[in-house]
Image (cartoon, one colour):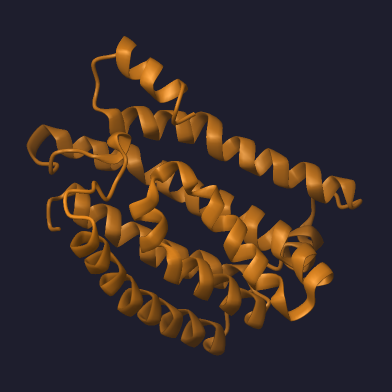
Length: 212
């Protein structure tokens, strides 16, 4: 999608590249990820129902401890990500931190409508990644690897972001380690949703509005 589809669309349509990314990921990439997750759980014999959501995918009501772990994990991720980004900028000056299709001028005036286009894709992104990576895949990795399931999960999740470039991969090192570890420890996929949304949402808004 990033190497073939998006460049082709950019040649055909005179719109901001980030809009092409939102359209392609919202219509193709993340629905495809959810479909893959559904195929995997169907192969295990599961059907649609509350037990699939709560028992197999482990989307269980959050309690106080879950929220506490989520908050602590988010703080640790923020505290580790800032030095990683600073290290990238110092070691590789001039390296773009985001791929071309995620770069844009700060949103203002009439272009603020792009935030409205981003919101549903943001929700779909978080839901699709957490349902499949933490709900479907992580329990299988726990069954295969025991207490090290979270490590395999984080490694695979990092590779999933390979197309976004080396700078983003380095900046994601803290979240791809901490988030799966906490989700495995709490056995609750909503923890992953909370951490992931808290990390991605403000980061995109800060970039889109020119705050960073």
